[in-house]
Amino acid sequence: MKQWGIRKDLYWCPNCNIPLRVERCHKCGGKAIRLRITEPGDARPAFNGDREFMREAFKNEFNDEKLMSELGIDNEIVLLNRTPHYDDMKEVIVGGVIVGRLYFDPYLLKWRWRLSKFSAIKAAERGLIKVFRTDKVKPLEVVGTGQGIEGEQALVTDRSGNPKALAILRRGRFRIQLIFKDKTLREPFKAKAGIKDVIKGNEEYLRTLVSRSIAHIAIISSKVGLPVLLSYSGGKDSLLSLHLTLNA
Image (cartoon, rainbow, N blue to C red):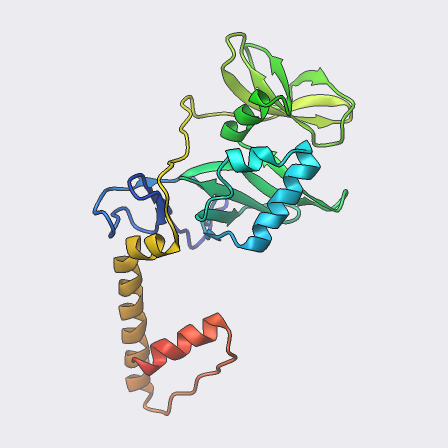
């Protein structure tokens, strides 16, 4: 299997309910848990425009926005992590849990929502999706039929009601698309947090990056021995480059 040359780990502090790039939270001093997200792990905060896309996706998928609030997507701290797909798809992380995936369907020209184990259970409890029961699940196995739109989702459970897999409707048949590997179900952390808390929790990590960057610029500049020329466009990347260069 091909691996990314550069991969970034992502952690979540259960005390402060904030994402971290290192295992130790600078804000509370506690140990964070490592999240299992799709590589390379280049997650970013969700902005207002992203939330509007998600709201549109919930309307298109379930004709219901209430599930969005129930999953905590209205919270201030929501991360998006890009994943491989034939179009745009991002994992949505809330409270240290992947609550689903936002993706664009180029055939329907609409934003849609792919359920995770956590959100599939919530959707089933609200009666938004079908539930099929079988004790044994196999990839691409047919578990039922339907007349909905292509890509309609259904939860697959065993006879005892334990969630086992996610099925997708293709050509009138629900086939198992995703088998849930984790036997336990963790709820998102609920503590209130804002962007300032995220910055505080990652302060030591950020200061280390700044120090290394300034040192690198200073070393290269001294070796070359020529005037430093910086291309500044006014965007966030060039502004950061200017700030680091002026402090080198």
